[in-house]
Length: 301
Length: 293
Image (cartoon, rainbow over all chains, first blue to last red; front, side, top):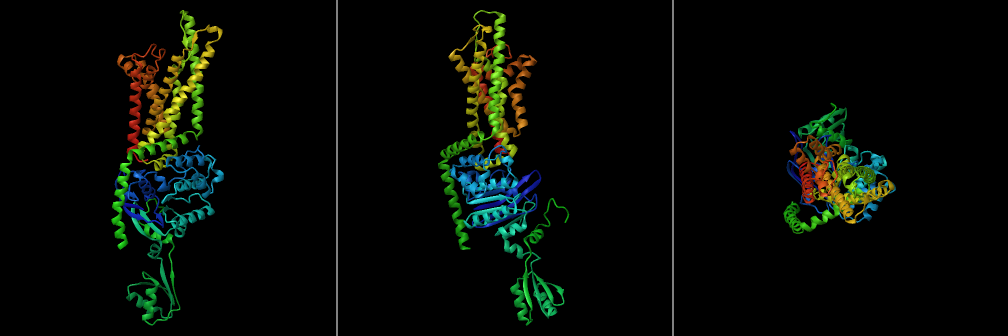
């Protein structure tokens, strides 16, 4: 639904987005990860036609965003929850947006209900808490019942209930066959929400893969083995090109091979196993490995 | 693999179909987008308090300034004792525009600079991605609001001036000729409409409220007065072509800071107003289209 080809954005001599090519698929939640300054927000602005790319293209359903008729009915996006006139009520904000794209006015009430803001819709936007502003921004994104949804840090400022609600919302939007693209710094949250991950660092694509593959690819994802013949098995595994660490008298840790292959090798060698299990890395660990070289504003890890 | 190939094969034709569909319906689609965007701008302008504050200020300032100027004109006429001199009640409204306009300029300015201040311009451009349409939609709302504000506040001020000058001291000095009053009030409204759209263009070009106000204040008042004060013929001629005196010429003002009528006809004043407004709009459009939001 969204496809980026060689997308590049240069500010002076700094490349904010560097030759980014990827496709976002319908029916999945794609998590968009990267350190601060990696170019996530810039990428989203480029897709929405707010910034002009230095090179490359960003297409929505095959056309540039600017060519969409009533674009809010195709793409709903929340970039900055505070980007509302502080003196305008949430309802008036949504009414104006609805009129701009020929959206029926009853949708305003519906989306306010959906995000749980119906009671506060008359309050001036400047008086809303960050969490309520996020809900208003999500309401604006949902207004046009769009096929594509983009959210930049949607759980910022939300309480635990709100975070859980956003997770459920993303899952259900993807479940309805929509394309959901969401950036977040909360890895534990992403691990629960996303099906697919796009990781960028310094504007460049680092990973574009299913969540399971990213986690499986981490060096911290390993196969743990308990066996009375640890020495023999370690030799056997190393001979097959698998890295092995000795954890204890009877315990080994093998990395770089799936659990099935380790089990098969043990079986072929006739080695008895007392335990064979996979230890999964967390997304946070996998992410830190991926982006270790591309943290721009780091505190010295 | 097969499905992927099929998908790719179907993409270009689909894109072409969409493109041609939009191209053929383009003027219609553009007009509808403009109409919808103007509706949104209309809803936006009436949903913030600053609009009402600016309108209230404009009304109060118009009445206050017009009454003061009208009283002064009547006093002068009495002192000079010229027989048969009459003060048209709406004349001070026209003279007051130079001062009052800034309350309405603020209204026009906020329709664009407030969006840059809050970041709301990004939401606006998401909803209406063709930038010329956004600017046109704002102008379509600003112009009639300014026109109506000018006519209505002018009418109230005219009535106030008439009432004040009807008291015995001024001995029936005031006149209320319908045609002249209508011309003055409509002219004032048209002038404010131009000033508002000019401000909108400047706001789109400059983006910040402080910067926009500085530019517009200099153009509408600071610069013409500066040039006038230098006294050189070229400078005075130039000042007469700036929007303030062009507007006074268009409104047929006879009593103003130059001490006499503007030295060219009303039509030429209108032409200069159109030119300045168009220049500001073009500047705003160029910046809006070129720069990232």
